[in-house]
Length: 222
Image 1 (spheres, helix red, strand yellow):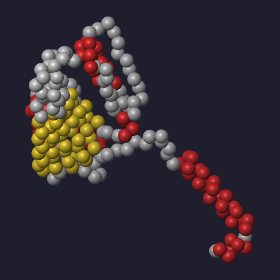
Image 2 (tube, rainbow, N blue to C red):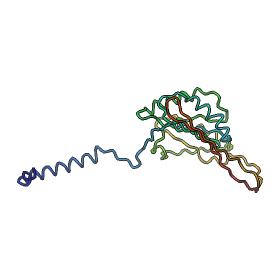
Image 3 (tube, rainbow, N blue to C red):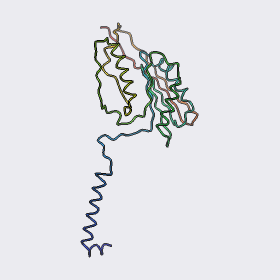
Image 4 (cartoon, one colour):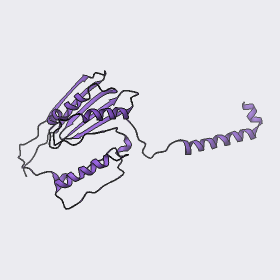
């Protein structure tokens, strides 16, 4: 073949030109290009805020009921529950080959059957985390002649409405520090430190773990 191309230079030039055209066509028209490509970790997440709750309160009111509700759900390889002050998070690692959308809907249906959540909790959010979902695409400012508490409630309503819109998988509320009520602080007062973890097998053969985290912070008198 090398001898033939050496004797037929025109054919070799045509072949080289064809390879260049095919490469340019594939590079510009066939290969998808993204500035920040979205990555999926084969995981379904659950987030549920619990205002004013300690890690122990989060475990009793949210972690245990959701863990029991998800018992026996097919497609979950590992369940990791994380309870911290005011927030509960679940990381559900799916088994290989599992349809994440179907698993997410199944998890949503199980969580929606729970009716024992306290009034201070907010609606649980079940979603599939992707790297592209962490880049904000829209900012909404909520203002008005209202108290800080009413503005916070209104912002939460806007957040829930945004999450119901197609294409929006994540929405956060910022600038709510003014809603925190002041409290007296003593030189020796500090919040307790709670650390516990447990792991046990699920019915589907995977594993499950729960972690409670509550930071200890020393408070000084003003």
